Image 1 (cartoon, rainbow, N blue to C red):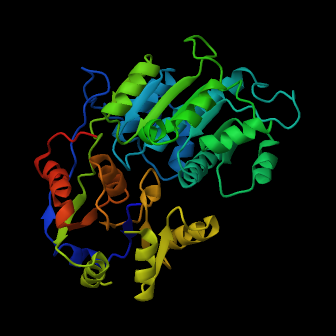
Image 2: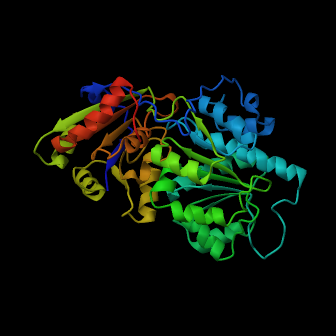
Image 3: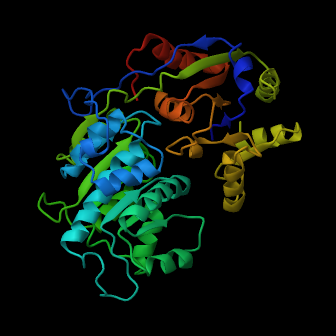
Length: 423
């Protein structure tokens, strides 16, 4: 699997800039349903201005956000109005809050109008969530769950996570106290449903995060199985509201959504299919030599196959490095991620596969180093989006062999010329 690395140390910047830089900001993809144009959000100075209640606006301000981002201004009112949408916005632009805030507000208002909703005793120890957030990886599900739980402290909603990495019994015990919103990977949620720990008959909102991954890359059948167990989508209450969310909604995803969910409206933010303008993109080309040797020389310049080989090689060189790839034991992966996000980090270099490229928020990351150049422009967007989040600066540095140069040049040419990137 392709390998990349994330680096946090501020001292890396000066040396990285010595490498050849190419421009920033990847451009637009084809709109979801022609002629649906990119939509420029109206400016909003407060969360109340986009329809949030004072209690939920206070909850998001408690997380450190002063006003909504442009993508949130675009998505929140549509979701509050009950629309089903396919929402595309750049990495690091606040998509998680863009769907959590209106969904949690809807849950709270439903509960105020019918206090017993979702809390019937019924079958023993069976949770009846009214909202689901489905994510492709346990790391992303855990991150989304943490944000939702932080918000729920202000509005008294029961948020539960159901992802791998914990025992099934631990998750079942959490669900025995009920759930209003469940954040889960599809496979774990289906297993819980089969065990009788959760009912999906009262689900009114379903959010599919990283929608292109979920629809095209191995999660589609389990995701559809979850939807089949929810109330049917008849267009009338209690037909569930759907939200497909991603930084990239390419042609293949567009066709699937149009064919299977024709009522879903496209919301394509102006920043969609772009990397943040605060990112610098750089290319280091090499010819006929071991890429690991090249990597060491690059790392030395900036002070410093497979993810396992890279991780072992860097550790042998004495670098404080952690890993995040599917071959690692879950406990080791979590420990390395925790060491990476510490202040200050005890492992400031993280070697990853694309497992960490989608959705996971590392706000302190300053540099993304592509050891294996991504095979598609979509993957480049997702990897690059781990840096330069929410207005911060960052650098994307790619090691490119002659055999990879054509692909790399086409992606970076699009970066430089701000032309359309087909995902």
